[in-house]
Length: 136
Image (tube, rainbow, N blue to C red; front, side, top):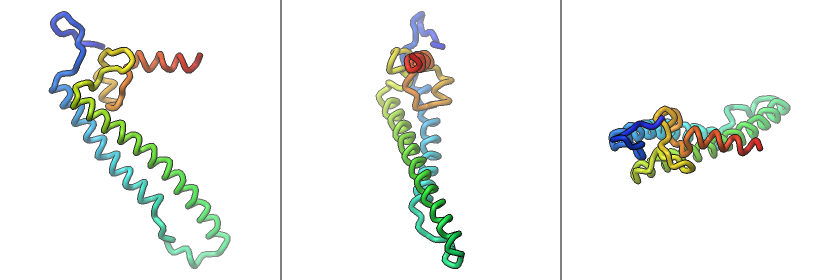
């Protein structure tokens, strides 16, 4: 829902609004980086956790699980890195004062959407149209 400003459709967020979004993004970025550190530690950890004494069969099963777990953690870490990059790109858009402008329609993305998905570059309208195009 676009707000009206002097009988015109608002085309940019104010500095105060941008500051609110910056704070949201910076909080999410800190959590995302902490999560990435945990994931990276999980898939680069080489300790055996005392399995040298266990039966060979159990050790083979455990090693197989570790490989799967490391692969999954690696995929999750890659996804987390993309999320961090998207958040950092959103901070650049704030600096450029282009944050919150839909890259397809050129209209402002709703504050509600940006609060939920602060790295969004598409309005709900554009996102829905994109989904419709994929179904065709």
